[in-house]
Image (cartoon, rainbow, N blue to C red; front, side, top):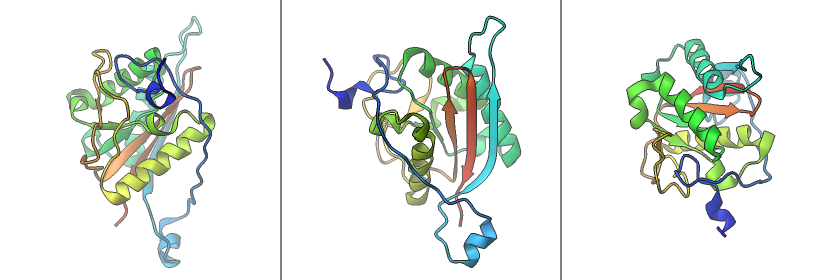
Amino acid sequence: TQHPDAVCRPFDRDRQGAVIAEGAAALVLEEYHTALDRGATIFGEILGVGSSCVVSPGRVAQRDKALANAIGAALRKAHLSPDDIGHVHAHGLSTHRSDIEEATAIRTVFGERTSKLPVVAAKSNTGNAGAGSGALELVASLLALKKGRLFPVLNYEEPDPQCPVAPVRSADCEAGESFVNLSIVAQGQASCLAVGACD
């Protein structure tokens, strides 16, 4: 029996599922110039958003296509190319099918760059807080963006050939100047935020 701390292992070949957690996060969204005028500490700027839902005629969720659609839409709205993205914050559920579908979507959008594009997955650190996970993961990447360094995906030890992504394995990895934050649900819905650093 594995210790709970070691069960959640997004994109690892031996992943067995998620660990349920509790958590929440809150963010203040406001116009950029308003935040500047009041002297607020700005952690990042939402540059683009995208969402999609894809279900086959047989009512089977196609999360890979939905997520690829959502990432593409967010990048278009942000006027960014895939090469502009510094890291990906994956949904990282740590289930067999979900991780494969997510890795497929990332590969669809980022192509050959996928093998070197840093991927983080906070669920390996926090567990799966359900609806609260998206906000928690956004905060984690905003803090990483501010500090300039990413955090490792815990328990990632054995690469899965069906998940050809590059999970971060040390705290020495640079966060870049922008990221995409991904969320998906079992029913085939997906969303993506494209976020950039602020000077």
